Image (cartoon, rainbow, N blue to C red; front, side, top):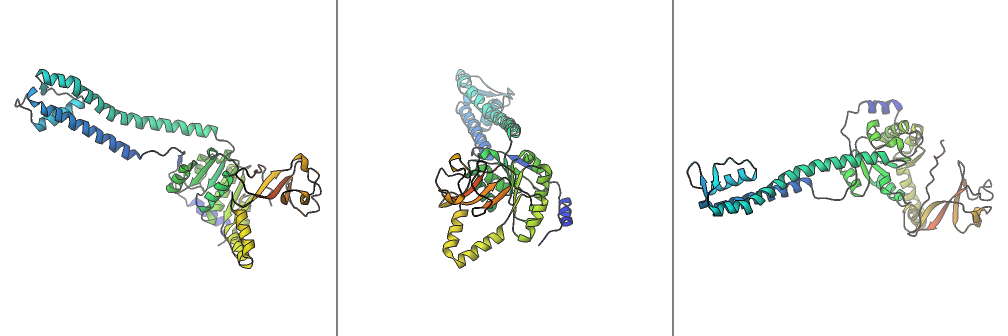
Length: 365
């Protein structure tokens, strides 16, 4: 259903404050709860071992209350000793018990403290390290790519963009789903959990410093609000958005999108083409599949090609980008190729084939 501007503004006004968080990619490590559980288990083993040592030599200890040391007293002594409490009500009196305390109980006490205190220190160190990584990431992030929505469309767009040589460190994913952001960080991308229609969430993704923004949300109304917010924060970024309904495409362009892809109609046209000509459908599917078979490639004109007509090229030229115009290969205005031109060609995909992205903003309609 087509959206009105008032409906979009009303929806944004009704949004409540949500919790958002920046998550940077990191190496897969064991779950923190499992790490703490292992350390507590190790501490319990140390405690039991200490109590066993004391109980085996219980004749060498004296209890101020009744003089004898049983199993409960052994665990009590181990607990107060390892925790450095040391009430002194149970003490070693024989030489063997004192030697055991020197060479066995004391090292166990140190080990016990290392396990417990080390867990706390590691947690504090990890928090400090994470804050340092986050501040450093924010200060160095420039001209990056922001992807709003890490569903099927967002993943495919990232796969294509990264095939051009874009480093994963230069990509930030924004999605309200924690699971989606976990998947993004597992793939090596930075992620921001939150509603991208809110400016503070996009600011955490440093969208005001981004070069290009890909909007691949599940709903068209959300895409409109995200586009409006992103364009307000960044006037110069290239914004490409996807919509399901073709009637909402003009609204996206009015909101500030440089290019709008209609996913439903594109899929429908591919289905219709496959019915009319299965072979033509296979060729089109091959072209839109990055990295295999035939690929669409944008590249600059080299000196040896200056003055030639697109039909005289070794590559199969579809269009010529000249300034802000996109000219067909058979357009009479093309004439001879110029050094400042860029070519849209079809090539056989190889490991070295890359799309040379155009960093200039697309022309507005």
